[in-house]
Image (cartoon, rainbow, N blue to C red; front, side):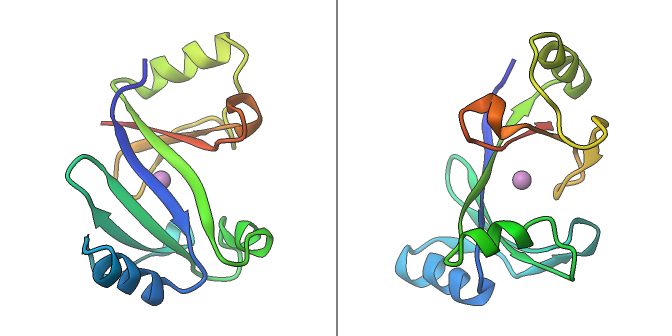
Length: 134
Ligand code: CO
């Protein structure tokens, strides 16, 4: 069912500092920061030859990543995103196998405009998994 790793998302307390670390210390290509108001995050994309890292900083008062940053003051890996061909088929298959989908279970447009769903980390050994239809 699952295919390529689309991205690893890392929540950081200081997006500008994190961008410089990836650009200058690690020598990566980093994008400009983009405010994604509807997602409550500001994001920088780090492009690697085989995947991408997304650096996320909370935006606004009820950002979905604020709590994570309170528990992880220095930041940390927040989720991994794996591509699927058909997100509804993937959802139905996972639900039939007893896995839980977060929220109302309906796919939403993700950071790249494609439909995404998040799977409960307790069902996947502590890892929050985002599925993205690509
Ligand atoms: Co993501």
